[in-house]
Length: 178
Image (cartoon, rainbow, N blue to C red):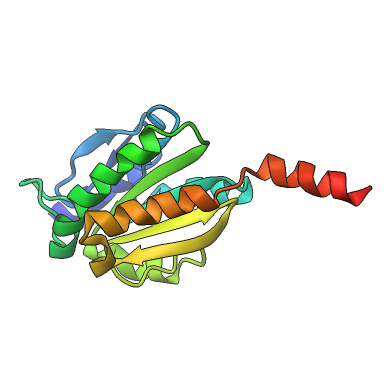
């Protein structure tokens, strides 16, 4: 049965060094964050990584979009419009020296409801770009907000402007305590 073999393949590969990205079962390397800033997760391994980032009070952008099929297009037409804008804006993260990560989660239609129930993500629509500062959600762009490169660019720059490393906050509070 095709469905059974597909399901078993997903379950077997989700904890390996490779994971399945879409229903067409492409195997992509999961080799960690490029330049220590970028990582692509999938539906099966996002929870532990996301929980660790929140518990460690990391600062990161989380981009959730519809996964791609064999043609390279997403099943989500809004994601196809937003993807070039987000990819261009990623250069702001790449070229910045701050300790801020960018995490992608491509999802299938059937996984959207589960991410909506997730207490950290609370997904309403795709595509969604969420900004977490020190482990707490600060802002998000949903669907139409991602159609303009200028709005995505402003969103990331605004996040950088408000970003204050956790260490400086601790030192500041420590100095004022005495």
